[in-house]
Amino acid sequence: MSLATGPTNSESVAPVATAPMTHQVAGLFAGIGGIESGLHRHGHETRLLCEIEPAALAVLADRFPGIPVATDVTKLESLPDGTTLITGGFPCQDLSQAGRTAGIHGKNSGLVSHVFRLLARNPVPWVLLENVSFMLRLSRGAAFLHVVEELEKLGYRWAYRVVDSRAFGVPQRRERVYLVAALPDAGDPRSILFADDAGEPDPPDTHFGKACGFFWTEGIRGLGWAVDAIPTLKGGSTIGIASPPAIWMPDGRIVTPDIRDGERLQGFPADWTRASTGRVGARWKLVGNAVTVDAAAWIGERMRSPGSYDSTGDAELPKKSPWPKAAWSMEPGRRFAAHVSPWPRRVPATPLADFLEYEPKLLSARATSGFFERTKVSKLRFPEGFLDAIEAHLQAVTEELAPA
Image (cartoon, rainbow, N blue to C red; front, side, top):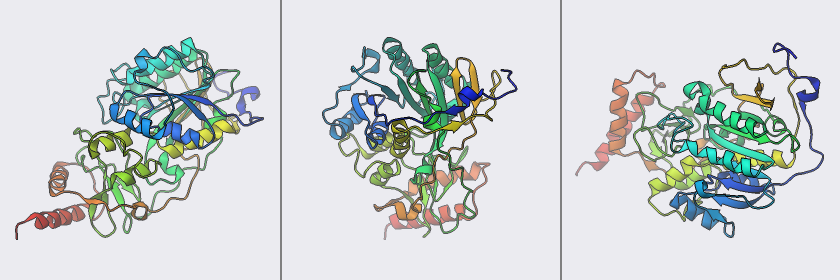
């Protein structure tokens, strides 16, 4: 087969499963259990959780009672007998735009190497990994190349896809890379990630009359602007604050959502992190670092009942080419771009202003002032009416604090 052609007929269609399949899961880098919660919706069972953060451990103990928990992946020597799926939203601090961008060998993100160590010792049939989409671009995709090359060395076939959490009805614009890998006799990862594609919807025609989210901790290099949604919940910002984005409400207020709505924006029930030790900021960090439950549930549904994917028109990726938003490999070194969007489905979403169930908090005068000052020296283009709303809000909250 020449590089100019697509896959052969024998590999172009991912097969449909003949029977439902449930997995026995080892959840590494479990955080507060976003992946595991989603998988549980479709009958998969968690046999082991691994997490080191004390606040997250408190949540896991509260929400997953009876499931064994390991506290250090570097000291984990084996997996429970019968494990069929390893999962992990491995640390993103060295890979994200808001982090240090040290790369895949950084102190935190480099911990993914222990996934490969465990797989070399115990070749589990299936693997599910999640991380920030920026890793596809960081250092020309070197981090992602390292991950797939390690999987290929261990004999895994793989597929990945950038997926937007909004596809599942939560009003949070959150693009994450989901990678599914499988040993050759276990199944076809394309039948999990590529079987569904609803197509990316057209952007809203106006922001007026809608709640709009933005990063109040930014203002110079970026805004994170999202119409009828919030931008990505993050574990921390470029100024080191674990906090929610702000929302410009239709009535003109600038607010930040309650932590319970933050949990809901990630697909968890309200108060999911109530057992966490620490202040509200610590809970926001946990929620920002979590995997959206609904996205994991979609993958869990497809793992239980795989679909099909026709890759006949997929083109082989040239060496050193940029990573696309979706790709796959059935043999080491040969990689193909997949023509699927970040929207596997289009679950109807509640407008952001109506989604919030708990009273939001007004953005403080100090936070608003800092953001407003940054916009004055920024070269960003701001949406019509936005800066006027910021200035009006600043005046309102300043007057409220003024002595009578």
